[in-house]
Image 1 (cartoon, one colour):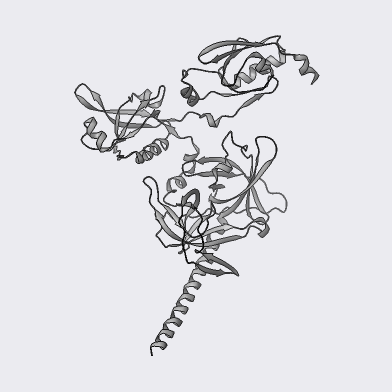
Image 2 (cartoon, rainbow, N blue to C red):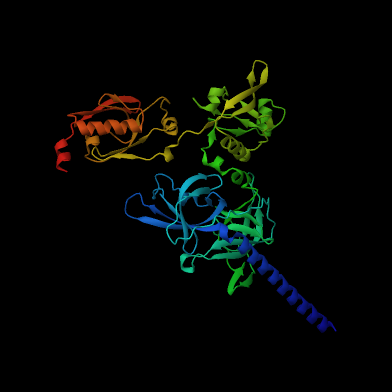
Length: 485
C-alpha cells in the first residue's frame, strides 16, 4: 500500500511538472510573439584614435517609440569618452532581422542609468528593399522582482543565424538592497546588456543594464528544452558578477520624456557637501538631523549668483524636506540637482549663522546646465607648427587655480623640433594672443593661424601664460619648407 501510494505521488508529480513545462513554453512563445519585433541588433564601427585601424561592435537595442528612438545600454562603446582609444562612431546600422536594416545616428545618453539613445534616419527605401516596421516595446512599470522569481531575457541571434529572436530562462537568486537607488538582482546565468526582461506572465518589465554586481556561486540547476534547443538554468560555477536589471519603475521618468535626458545635467556650483548627521546637527545647534551642509560655494556659479553661502545648511527644496542624514545619501541630493530643468527656479530653504544664532532664509536659484568638462573637449592639431591645443574649460581653471576670466586655448602637446617648440611653447601653456591679435577661444585661434600661414609672416609671436606669468614667445618659420612640400 505504501509503495503504491509513493508510485501514485510520483506519477502525479511528473504530470504536474509536464503541465508546468507546457505552460512555461506557451508563455515563452507568447512573449516572443509580443516583443520580438521590438528587439534590434545595433552594429557600428569605432575608428582607433591612433589611426591604425577600427573595431566593430555589435550590441542589442530596443525600439522605444514609433518615431524611431532606439535605446541601448552600452554607453562606453556607443559614445566612447574623448581621449580614449576610439573615436566616436559616425553611423549605426539597426538590424531588425534578415535583410531588414536602417541607418541611425547617436542622439544622446544618460550616464547615471548608462543608457544611450539612437535615432533611426528617415530615408526613402531603395527598390526591392524591405522597410522596417517600428514596434515600440510596451513596458510594464514593475517596481520589484522577488527572490526565486523566474524571468525571460529576450535577445537576437547573430548574423550567422539571420538575427532570429531568442531567449534565456533565468531565476532571481538574491535581491541586493542599495543605500541609494533601486535594488540589484542576482540571477542564474549570464545576461546580455540591452535585452528586455519579461516576467512569467509574458509582460516586459525592464532591461538588462551594464552595471555589474557581485554574484555568489549557486548549486543545482535544471534544463529546459524548447523548439529543439536545450537551456541549462543555474548550476555549476557562477560568474563573479551579474549585470544590473533596470525595471520599468527605474526607467519611468526616462521613458516618459527621453528628450529630457538628452540635455546636459544641471549644476549648483557647491563642493565639499556633508550630510547633516545627528552629531553635526547637535554641533550646529539644529533640533534634528537631516539636511545638507554646503562646503564651498564656487565663484560665478548658480549658487553664488543666488546668494548661497559657505556653511549654509540646506533643509528644504521647493518646500520638500531634505531627508539626508548620512553621507551615503548625498547621491540623492546630487541627482535631484542634475535632474533640474535649466532656466527653472528652485527655492532652497537654508539655515545660516546670524546675529542671534541660526536664521532661516529662502534662496531662489536659477538652475543652469553644467559647464563643459575637460574630458568632453577634443584636441585640435596645427600640423605646420606641430602643436595641439584644446579649449579652456572651467574645471581646468579651477584645478590650476587660474582666474575664471582667463581666455584663450591650452597647449596640450608640442612636437620635438617643431616650430611651436622652437618658439618656446610647452604643454600646459595658455595662448591668449597670436601676432598681437587676441585669442579668446579655439575658433579664433584657428582663424588667426590660418591667416598667419596664408600671409607667411616673417616672425610669429605667441602671447602665453605659464605659471601665472605672461610670456612673449616668437619663432621665424621656414616657409620655404612648406612650399617644397
